[in-house]
Length: 98
Image (cartoon, rainbow, N blue to C red; front, side, top):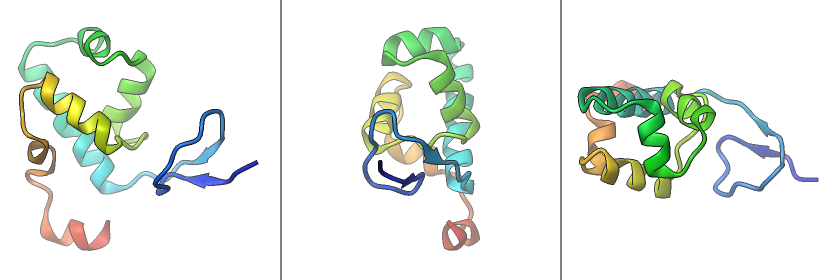
């Protein structure tokens, strides 16, 4: 059995992970939610477009589940923004702490 933390580069199916909430994860999730709602898109609509379960999207938007690079690109495409959008407004001092 593997022990995998939230900071791991790889994800393994059905392997418990330690939950570490990081300020960048919360910021990215908040940006995704703000963009989704500004487009008038429901969670259900975004889930369907991304092919993910609502609980996963809710965890991503809350920052409780880290969004990997591939998913970030998919979300950006569906929400019609560049990937850099999700990092806008993240303070310099926060970068040092992340």
